[in-house]
Image (cartoon, rainbow, N blue to C red; front, top):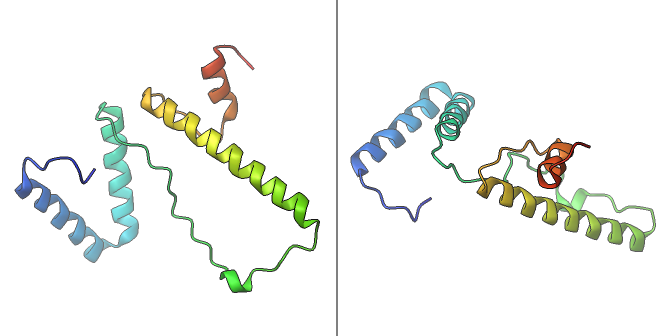
Length: 121
């Protein structure tokens, strides 16, 4: 989004200052709520909001404190590779769907499959 030209820097500054004020006076949770509301309004208005696959998840266990698995390392490595592959393919399908302006709820794979196969599951 930073590559888009700013045709009204003053308005942009006002929006940024308003966000900063909400963060300072009402907290991050309220700012998050307002941003989600703005994004929803933009999506519903056809503004073409870009897809963002990041989440607020943060691993709270330091890598040094993680325990090694006691199972078959080769098998677990293969399973992790398949999981990464599956995630990559699913992410690619989601990007395609978003580029077609199709709203897909990622927890419901049946709707996704139904959309691409055009049949009920």
